[in-house]
Length: 462
Image 1 (cartoon, one colour):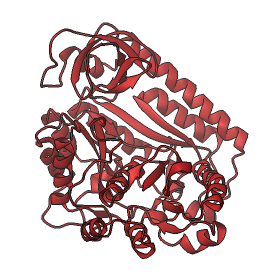
Image 2 (tube, helix red, strand yellow):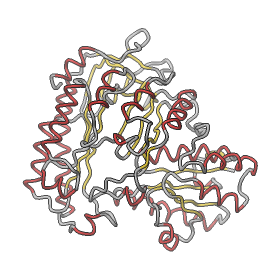
Image 3 (cartoon, helix red, strand yellow):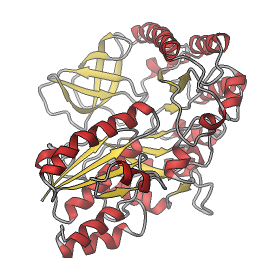
Image 4 (spheres, one colour):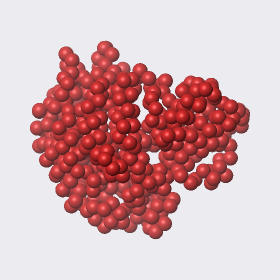
């Protein structure tokens, strides 16, 4: 029996797909790169933007003919498109889909396979015994076959759902209320991944800084970060996404003190004007965000700061947009995840705020920020030429090794040796806005991450 798993969207979806793939293989399925050849096809979906939802619907439409030609094929829909309550409506819209799985839940598919006899009965019983205890499998955490021996990085959810309810965000309606996973389960999963060759883990949460606030006696995110950083075999630990209201000095100090915690802070601003932030219900002002950036750069002078920005939010005037552009020039972020506002069903913005910024104006605003940011990065990265950085080699692209620095900078280098999973010292010979090219230096990479000349340059805004 073969399965095909198609995934779109965030890192949380990637983690969910990894868990599902491992479970399916535990009951006798083997991966297939082509949906047409598979006995089971699962689409893991995203609805944060309309474009992502449209892609999933288009993919379903293409699979309808395959399903009609092969009615014994099991077709499953998973993720935020299904959400917590959307399955009945989706069943009416896509009657050829056999089973619907809410985000991070695999039991509905396993139940369906059991009822229809499409499984190895002994293996299924063992897998379900583990799976039903939690929405995320908390057993042995075996990597799927396609990742085993090749994956260097892995995503590990630590906070599921969200209760913050920003007016533009559909996540609380699709992934449910915020809940932290037990610390023991997270550490067990990270140890198991390290034992299978994973060298970097990314701890995930819609607001990851709130980890532990709903669990007495298990500590906060700073405690969890230190514990994960102590796992033998891991080289690096990252975390996202943070919220300006919950990023504490304890978290930043943990990153500063633990060599394996990467100095990369993901903290969305979303907009550069207080009135827009208030309509978004973000709970902070631009001044608050500036002070947070000051704290980050004081405690972690070499850290990369990433952000999210939405352009064209309902009611955003040209002057308010230009305030966001000014903030881009002021903060000089290392990376911006840039999106045009997309009205999402059930959100407060969709219910109460007219989507009054025209589509062509949203695109113009997106392009303006993109151009400003590209210029900033080209200027900043030019200062990296000639420096030596530490790169965790992940895979090869067009004959070159590809990896990232602790700050998350993308670096390519050539080396005939097998560098997968190794930290390599690379001297940068050219740097562009979104990538750098370099040459490996002889000798093994160091255990530590700090390179003084880089930290000094970053402190100076380089």
